[in-house]
Structures are given as structure tokens and as C-alpha cells.
View 1 (spheres, one colour):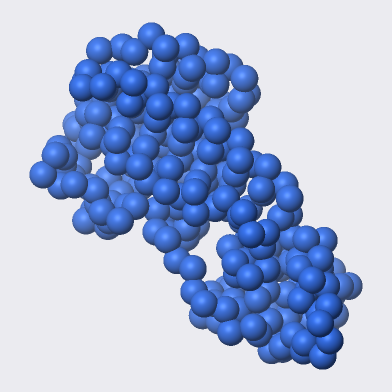
View 2 (cartoon, rainbow, N blue to C red; view 1 turned 180 degrees about the vertical axis):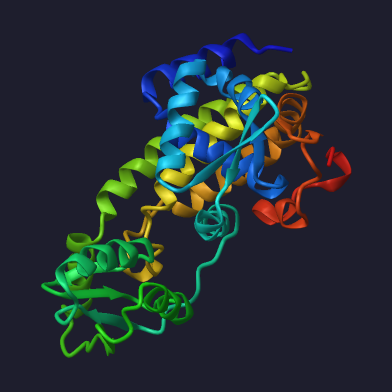
Length: 316
């Protein structure tokens, strides 16, 4: 049953946020299609995206861009067009999936990993800096990227994949607290070189927006959640959360403000996702189609999201 207040809130949100169709389609691929074979028909994707106010032309333009950028590949079977996640983008989907749906925050050993870029060729330097930022590194000085306790395996794989193992020098450093003011100075350095204040504002807006959706669902009490509204909330939630998380370097709590809102945002996301998941899946599985008909069962990893989705209530 459609909740009119929730409908108004969702319509306002979709209109005010000026959502990118290309980015929103990426969210749908990551949240709904990736763990169900990674393939969907263009006709059914157009139907799915219609609930966000995207018309057929917008969807066609967006998937064309995603093909151009190597995220998707198009296939034609008979007269029907299908879009599939490419092998080259699969790793990015896996990394994003882990970052969004699984919580990992290791204790910090007070040590820093430094990457010296002075020997890297200019065109490679731009690529490497971008990839290091994706891992959470900040540019603390000319030709020096730093991160407090990075995942060495991810760093090693990155340098191997870019063929840059012979162009960079890696250091391990430690903050020496030789006087009382050392720690506040380090926090100021973090504030300067990582987008801490911007992320804080984005988290706070995200919490306010999606807390309202959760409250509107709760006010409806026992009434069954409308499947389209549930799908809209699930995709918008992951879309907005993803955009913040992929910019969040996941710094140790010691280096962040005391009221850092990341855990509140995760708890809200988990609760809201669990609330809308089943009804949203119902809409998606009714609508989306592959070359063999309905979508295949999801990979078991899919059900581990946000601490584990309740299998007994789900349609696989």
C-alpha cells in the first residue's frame, strides 16, 4: 500500500538531489545485478529506472556512457539488448561491495605508510595518486602520499597492476610525541590533507534524510510496505551511502573528531536496508529480466550484507 507522506518525501528527494542517471544505474548494478549474474536486459532496466523519473532516452544515454568507460559491455540476443558487468570492472564492484555492506575498522598501531612519488613519470603520477586516494591515502607533501596503517596487500596489488613497483619507494613512519602538542598537530594535518569536514557535513545530511524515511515507515506501523517505495528507498540509500563511503578514507578514530558520525550512518543504513530489503527485492525480481527470463538466484555472499539478511523471509 502506497504511503502518501513517504511518496511526497521520496518525490521531493529525487527532485532536489538532481541524481546522475549514470551513477544511479551503477548503484542498481552493484546492489541488485552484480550478485545475480551481472546481466540485465535494457528493456527491463528502463522499467526499473522509471521509478526514479529516468526516461528511456536517459537510460540509453547512461548505459552508452558506462560502456564507453569500460564498466559495462552490451550484448544483442535476437532483437533484445542486454548489458553485462565487464571483467575489468568486476574488481571495482567487489571492492565497493565490501566497503558498503561489510564493516571493517582495525585498531591503529600509530604507524604511517608513506609512498614517495618523486621517481614516477608525470602521466603515471596522476593515475597513481588517484588510485592511492581510492585506498584512502592523502597528499601530505610534494610527492609524498600517506595513510595511517594501510592494507599492504591492497597496496602491493595496486603497484603490481599498474607496473609501478620499480618507480615508487615505500616507507613506514611513526609519530613521535616528543611534546604535549604533538597529537593536536597531527589531527590538524589530517584535517588539512583529508576531506574530514566535508565528509562530516555529508554524513550529517545523509543521516537526517534517511532517518526521515525510516520514521515515515515506522509511523505506518503494521501496514505492508509498497514494493516500489521500498525499492526507491533501498537504491537511494545505497546510492547516497556509496558516494560518501567511496570518499571516506576510513581513518583511525583517534585522528577524527569525537562526534564522528560514520558509525551512526552505518547503523541507520543497516536498519533501513533490513527494513526495506524484502519488499524491494520483490519489485526488482518482478521487473528485471536476463536472456533466460527472470533473474537467477543471488550468490550466497549477497545475503551477508549488513551482518546477514534473514533468509527465511526472502525470495531467492
